[in-house]
Image (tube, helix red, strand yellow):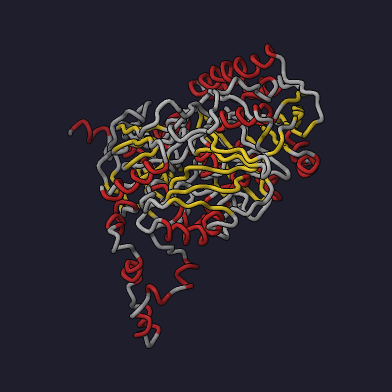
Length: 635
C-alpha cells in the first residue's frame, strides 16, 4: 500500500472578496498509525454542528475482516450501523444511536494501475491526501469538488461534485468499489461484476453497506488556467448558456442584495504553471476568505441590518485575475468559516429562471443573506441517485453562517427549487421525502430494490434514510392510492353495490392497513404525525396536514418563550400566528427569525388593538399565556 503524506497548503483559487463564498468544507484526515480496531463511546457531531448523534459505540476497524465482524456483532446486539467520514454532510445521513463506523484506519492507496489508468484507494482516505499522492505520481482525477477534506467514501456516497461541461462528479469517475453488506459479505462491484449493485452503489447514501475501497479513473496530471472576473447578474444570466458551452468548467457566485457576481472559468492549459504568489495567495486564502470573512459574518449575525452594506462593499472590491496550476490547486480551496448549506440540482435549462426568482424573493423579503449564492453545472450521468442522473444539471447552492437562523431562507429557496423539479444534494439540508424524491428520480425504485435485497432488515437504516427512501412507510399520495386500490380498499370495494356503499367506507381505517404493523413502526404514527401539538401555554392545538407543510394555527401569545419552530417528522410546521381574537397576524416557518425581525412590527399593531393583553418586548423569553393582563394579575 502506498503511504500518503499530509497535504500542503493549496492555493485558494479566488480573487479578493470573491473568496468569501462559503463552500462544502472542513478539517480532518484519517490516521494510519494504528493497526487494530478501536472502540469508543461519546457524542458525534458533524462539521457544521447542526447534527449530533450519541452512538452506543464508535468503532474504527483496521481491516475488512474486522469490519465484517463489527457488522455481525451489531446485528446480534440489535444495533443499527452507520459509517461516518469527516462529517461534512449537513444532513443526518451518518447519525445513529447504534454503532458508528469511523474509517480512520482504512486509509491509503492499494494499487495504481498505469495500464488501466486507475487508482484503488481505501475508503477512509481523505481526498486531500489522495490528490497530493496522485500528483507525486504524475496523475490526477479529472474533476473534483471545491474542498478536499472529506473521505473518498463520504464524498462519493453523498454525490459530491464540482462544476464541468463534460466531466461529471467524483462518483462518476468510480470504476469499481468494494462493499461489505449487512451479513458480512464482501462484494466487488463494477460494470462487469455485480453490475446491478454498481449501478446504484456509487452514490449509496450509506444505505447498502459499508464501502471499504474505491477504484477511480485517473489521467496524467495536467494544468488548468483559472480566469476570475467580476460580472453583473444580468450579464451572467443572459450569457449563461454561452459561458457554460465555451468553458470546460464554469461557475459563478452572486452576492445577494447586489447585482454583482464573480465568475470563474477553468480550462486546460499547455502551461507554463503560474500559480498565485505566496503573499497574494495568503491574503486571499487566509486573510480575506477566512479571517476577514469570519469577522464580517459575525457582525452580520449580530447586526443583520449591516449585511446589505457589507455585500455591496465586498462585491464592488472584486478584481479580475488569472493563474495556472495543477488541478487540485485550482479546483479546491481551504474553508474555515463554518456554515450550513442547501443545494438543489435543476434541469440546466431551468437554472436562469430559478435564479431570477431567487433574487426577486430575496429583494422583496426582510431576509439578510451574508453568503454568496453559488452556481455550478454538470453533464448527465448514469448513476441511479445522482443529482445529475439522466439530465444535464445546474446546481444552485445557498449558505448561511453557522448559528444564523436559516429555516425561513432555506424554506423559501426550497419552494422555488422544487417548482422546477429540483433534486436536493443528499448531503445538504432539505425537507424532501421519498414521495417527492421518487418523482424526480426515474430510477428511484431501482435503488430501493437493491437495498431491499442487500439490507432487508435495515441494519444500515436511520431516520434520515427512512425519510428520503421511504422505508417502511407506504406512498399514500393520490396517484399511488389510485394506482393500487385493491391493496387498501379491499374487501369493502368488492362488497360495494351502490354509490352509498362507497360513501360508507371508512377511508382512514382502510389506509391504516398499509401501515407497517409487522415491523412495529406503525405504532410511531402518532409520534411522527400527531393530531395535536402542545404549545408553551399548555394548549393542545390541532395540526392541519393538507398542504406542503403541516400548519399550526395558534394565538401568538401562546407561543411566547418558544425559541424554535415545532417540527413534525423532522419538518418545521408553518405557524399561523393569530391575534387574541383569532384573526391572522403573521405566518412563519422560522419562529426564531420572526421573534428577532418580524415581531416588533406585529407587536406595535396588536398593542393598539388589544391593549388588555400582554405584549412583551422579548417574546423569546416571555411566559406564554392565553389570558389578559387582568386575568393574569388575579391568578
